[in-house]
Length: 327
Length: 240
Image (cartoon, rainbow over all chains, first blue to last red; front, side, top):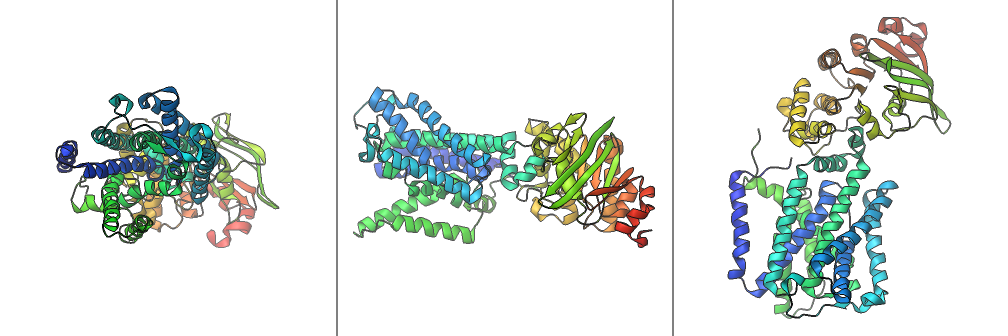
């Protein structure tokens, strides 16, 4: 089911990883910034994929966890001088607490599928409105982190620092997903995703399995929030908690392949460069069309759903014979 | 001592009494069948035992412990495995992974669980198809996969909800052979709800007949098919 990589594919993956590690030697700042975006979307896509692709719980409000992670770590840094490495723990705790509340409400009261997704959107929207009015966090005017040459261990640094951090996050999430997919918990998620009643008949505590998925997913996504806050150096409620951010997060795993380990990575590598190229192109011709990226993503989603409904990765793995052959 | 004891259990749906004061006991090592016409309350009774529904009155005990307020997953962990009348394997998972999910209940390590899943699949003639996706299986294979998955959880009691329905006679006989072997060699107690009298007669030690939610007869298969009330309400004269 998971499709273990064959030796040839493993070598290929290691070569790709080595190329990405060496990329800053040759890549310019623009290319690096695109790669950082790719890694970021591969990372948060992986977090979302654990919850939707594996445990089958649709969240359309993952921007909530990004925003909370960003705000908690930025506030700790600005107000108390607590650096992001430590602040990330607080960010994770706060986001996981929100995830626990959403999960408990949804799973305890049988709010499923689309209705559960609406619940996740509602929480993200409420939180956006709340942050619009919290003066301590800059309200609608947002938060700004000073761009100063600081200590690298406080995530004050240049593109190179964020490049390697984003790469580490993306690889770490990939390894974690590959590990979880081979554990009892991973199989319980699949069972719950496929048929919850049948899963319960096999002794699986479905509530606990789904709750674990939400907790891990929200915690991981919060770390992505810490990253964006310190990389972009600013936070606005209307930007970070926006539903468009939540949709951006789900695109890479949907296009790459839901419930697959490499899907989010493949999706991010395809979509992000295309989106960025589109922005650059329209800028080049002086066309000011703010919605063009969104329209492109929408189109990409439709094409994928029609042509390769299970995503690019399963098809790619078969076409390039990357997974182990079975009789 | 009986492994499963159902005592004066009733279940109402609004005005309808689906199960009406039914009592019976299944001894350890027995193959016990519940038969009856459509709408007799067989599946409701089954769901009461499996924890999908809670009885309005009465008590259900398993191995001396009350289970009638437990959730389906807790009941499975106590040692009751079940199949579904309308089969519901995990469609996107392989045959092997379907069985693996069941095997993981008592084996936290995936590799140990996989070994057990293979054993179970061999017993149900599914080992050669273990890499197929469950949604690609034929109905007889899916029926056996349901049994395999439940069996992989190492149940003391196996609840089978019409596993013979839709099978051809030869497939039914194969299933009967498999179940008898599980009972004899594995020491697994079996409670089956069944329409296919051919299978009931071949398998069951004792039979309970339900009609309009109430038990109208209980006994060995031979006794039950000669019972006048059973013939009138269910079997009809041609069954003999």
